[in-house]
Image (cartoon, rainbow, N blue to C red; front, side, top):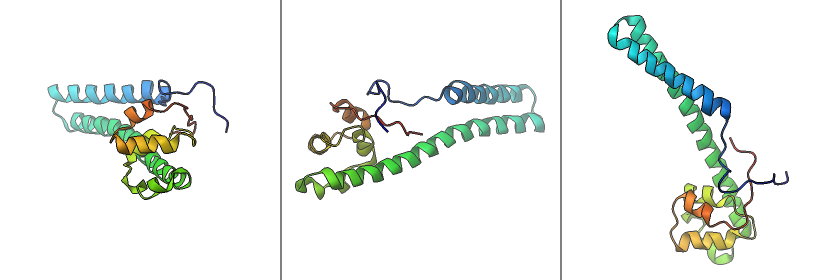
Length: 146
């Protein structure tokens, strides 16, 4: 797929309006109201509603976290394959030194930029994805994210 116009560091985060602006807030308000309701009335139904409300909210949060975790595993595999093909011999033996967060950060670098970026990440010990993404000069968009 060709790159869509405009994806870069400032706008690459995926927001799903229905999930982030409706489902999560609704479930959070429901959980908070159910907890608030329990305070005055300690009945089995009120306690159960509070427990279910909190469980529903955490189900939505964990569903998102688990999906992102699976995505990060795929990114790690993709990056290991890309680095095996693209890194020079002196960096080939260091592929296992990259953390998953470093690989997530480097994934937006185009193939031509990846070897220099990988060297910089290791030499400067850049640990988190944010600073690594800021080092990318030629952004490669990812349009298949969860």
